[in-house]
Image 1: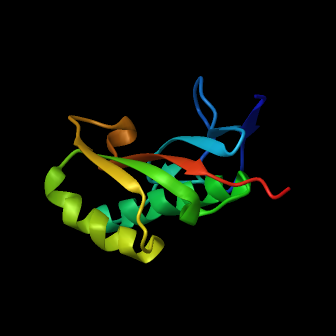
Image 2: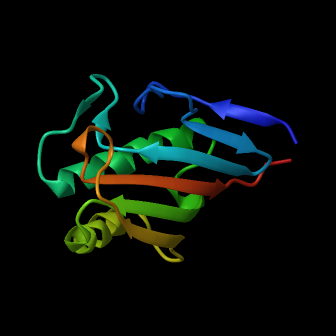
Length: 130
């Protein structure tokens, strides 16, 4: 299958040797997003709730650029520098997702780029309309 590189200016630009997402057939593999504001490439001001919200907005923008939306997420990985913030992830996630929820993993990590408190990546399944 042919790979399609997904890119949008509505999410932070890829600043390394990676793409925002890659679509292969009906599946989209999204790179990790941290709470960067796309227009400024600066970290969002505010607490962990603001960071988590910005990450979901970034993921949403990439999903839409791929022809889908967050409803198409089948797997979500959440990386937190403090697992005590996991209840906040659930609270914010409930604003973006409804049942049936995607599969999810939450991983505690020592550090993230730009001292972010959260990073997430996702896999989407988007059915081609034929």
